[in-house]
Image 1 (cartoon, rainbow, N blue to C red):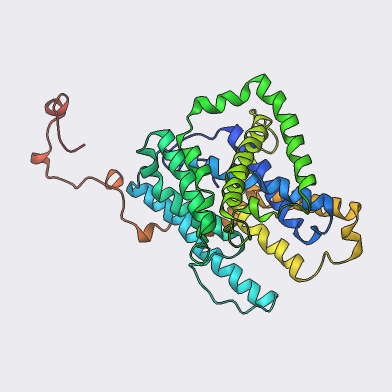
Image 2 (image 1 turned 135 degrees about the vertical axis):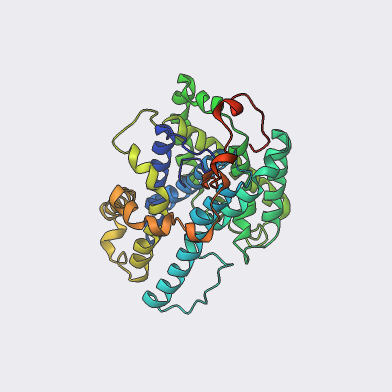
Length: 368
C-alpha cells in the first residue's frame, strides 16, 4: 500500500496520495473494529458504506502506481520483498496467532489467505499481469477486466489465493493502471468537490436503507452469486451495480482529500504497516469477547470503539512503528538477489588497456 511507485526509482511523494491512503486506512481499521457491533442498524450501515469504497480506493491507487511495472530485475525484487515476503510472514503469523489465542486448529496453507492477507496475494497477482493490461487499449483493458470480474462472481474460486476477490476487484486495479496524472487533476474542479458531498450523503443513506434488504458480502466481493443464492441476471446486476457505486464513492471521497501537506500526511507512508498489524488487535478483541458487554452496543460505546479504531490506525502508521517493523514489511534481502549490472563495480583493467578520455568523449559504444 505504499505510495511511492516501485517502478520509478527516486520518485517523490505526492501529499495528495499520502493523505488519501491515510484517511482510507483509518476507515479500514474503524470498519474492522465495528465488526462485533454490527447488530446495531447504524453500525451495520456505516460498515456497508465504508466497504463500498475503502478497498476499491486502495486498489485504484495501487494500480496507478503500477503503471510502469514491466518486471525489470529491480521491480521483481521489490515485488518479492515488499509484497510476497510480507504475505508469507503475516499469513503464517495470523494463522499461528489464531490457533494460540482463539484455540483454532487451522493448518498453515499459504495458498489460502486468511483474514486481511488476501490483499497482498491479490496485489502480487495483479502487478504481475500489469504489463498485459498496459499493452491493450484502455477501453479493451477495462472492458475485459469487468468481464473477468463477472466470471469470478459467477464461479466459486475462493479456495486458492482468495481468487473471488482477486477477480472481482480486478477492474479497480486496471482502472488505476489506465489513469494518467491529468485525470487526478479533474478532482480539483470546484463542481466535483461540491457534488461529492451529496454523493457521499446519498451513499450513506442508501447503506442505511439497505439494512435487511441486501447482504454486505456484495461490497466485499468475496463470494460468487451462487453462494449468495441469486440468479445470474440478479448477480450480474449486483456486481456491476456495486462496482459502479464503489467507483462513484471513491471519486467523491478523493475529491475531498486535501492536496496540501497536513499534520497526517507523513503517516500515509505507513499504511501497509497499519493494515497488516491492526488485525492482531481487532481480532484479539473479538476472540476475547472484549466488546460483548452491553455498553459497547450503545451509541456511546459505538463511538468509543470508533475512536479506538481511529487512534489505532494513527498509532500504527507512526514513524516509530514503521521503523521497528521495517525488517518484515520491507526486508532488503540483498543476499538473495544478484546485484544489478548498473551497480556492479567495473572490473579493473591494466593501465595500458584503459582508453584515454579524449578517445572516448565522442565515441559510440554498445555497452549501454
